[in-house]
Amino acid sequence: MDIALLQELATWEEGVSPAETGDPLWKLHSYRIARYLLDCCLADTREARPALHPQTVDQLRRSVASISANISEGYSRRTPTDRTRFYAYALGSTREAVVWYSSIREHLPESRVRHRVDLIAQVRRLILGMHAKVGRTGGWIPKPERG
Image 1 (tube, rainbow, N blue to C red):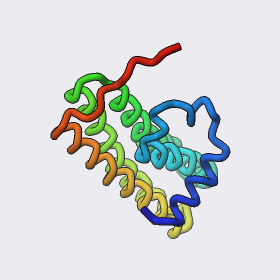
Image 2 (image 1 turned 120 degrees about the horizontal axis):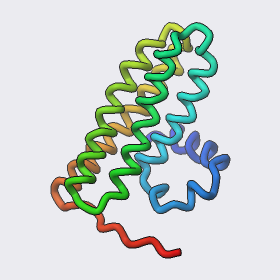
Image 3 (image 1 turned 90 degrees about the vertical axis):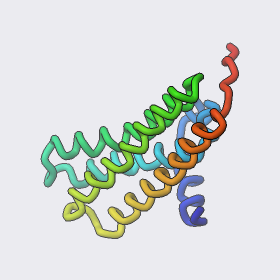
């Protein structure tokens, strides 16, 4: 893991609600990077919006949001089959997000698009590992929440 990315995440996490960071899901590095990517995407689309077709903005936002949404849904599933299904959805969304970021590259600085694609690649690698682990071992067993 890149030290600069870890510092970037730590700075960003300071502004994230304790309601979100207090969830056991927050321990998943893949989820934290995906959530950071979502916040970056929202800022990117606000900046590039005047020049972008509204459907392009919508598709990019939806594909990026789908990554963290599917990681969180898969994490919450009890059976390995369900978990792997949602992790596969998240994986597909990473690939879709790369395409959508590539489609807006002329509206954002090249270094920023490269950074976003690098974030997506990090998440994709982590999801591939999670998917493989669940396939091999069944993954973790969720504990019932109290409260």
